[in-house]
Length: 357
Image (cartoon, rainbow, N blue to C red; front, side, top):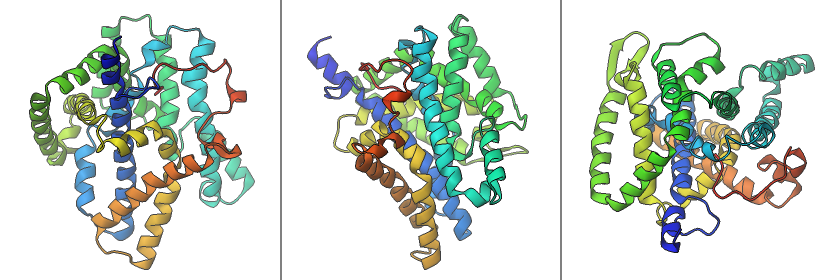
């Protein structure tokens, strides 16, 4: 590949990472934290603010895009032996899930275990079957990786169609893991199966900026209308949650984020998002504590009565604090919080050509 083409792909980076992928991940993680922060502040302060509108707008594509990005590089490893694949796509996520399950649960000892050691252990055991709190995303990525490899012999089109049907059907078993699997797997598969087309879309966007921007404006209008309009039907709060509509908006919204990321990648404006994307696992694992602490301070001391401003402040602190923590511990014994120790790899670590999910 020529140097110019390589720089276009990686945003000029020399470590083989794809810049727009990191930017897209950064956008996704900010939206995820924003949702938790805003809804929590709204509940604590007994009202809503402008950030609630942003959260509602992002709901149709927030998690679909995160899962789609997570599946982008699966094709590079899915045909490897189970030991190698399992180390990178299962043990990796299992390590962080188990570690932060213990950390988060310990911080909520009385709440999750009733203040007793037996209750705490029972909670941990149950969390091996039913993902705990915000950690469900990490848990589900490991499940997706296993199921997708087991079914890799199935025709891609048929597999994608079956996953789309699972998303469209109103599946509500009461088991959170199964329900989320049915509702999200299609996006992970789309990232895996349609990766060449997704990368082609990113290239097209950078070569056709005006058309890409026009498409984004149209998408924003349609997505906003459907995401903010009540459906009037029980079980479907907005038009965006209706069967077929939710799938369409999830896919199109994910493509919109890819386009936005491609247009922004490599620019100064995108630098904070790209950095956040490169360290999105740290944010996802650790944002809960600064989020809760900042919300408590704002509410207790009456820092502001504006729910929207309070939500924005909590979101900013919840995103930045884990990044500062990760940087602080990166070269210390505490690095295990965000980097799996070599001793817990079941295969030798090798340099990766592109970033993992």
